[in-house]
Image (cartoon, rainbow, N blue to C red; front, side, top):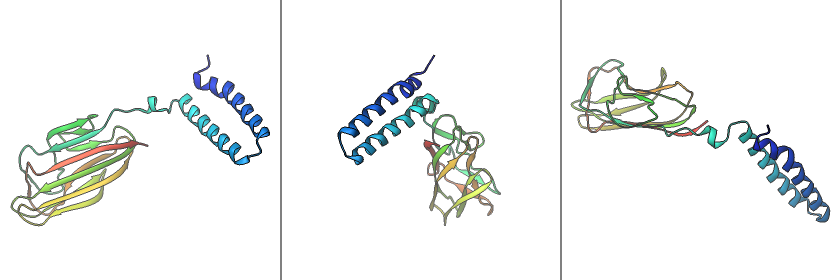
Length: 187
């Protein structure tokens, strides 16, 4: 049995093409004919996407979003991953509050932000993608804030997390430190 897209491609497109050719014979405007043909070609491309299963309905994914903070101030050292364990939003379940790792469930374009406040000393953090350092954040002294952000293309399974830059033991303030991420679009 033919799908709706196949029916339109095989039956309606030739009929529409005939109408365009007839109109072109009666009207000498090649610009208008080219515009109509371009629109028809765009229409055919869209129909091909629909019939191949890449339309919006089949490509729809539920929203993916993260917003997490710390439930208490956190002392970190070495190259530790910062685990933001107080979850406000984890739509799509991409963030693991036990490991502190966001794992992309869908290939797409994502945006991440991290804001933080140091307690007692300066603080150095890194936005990581898999094992790659992307950007650094730094707060200079006690009760100083720092931030990092990045827009990333992620493949399914890519990991994004916040890592401590190994500069001794440092403390993140609970209520003033957060990790946010969300998918902008699929790729």
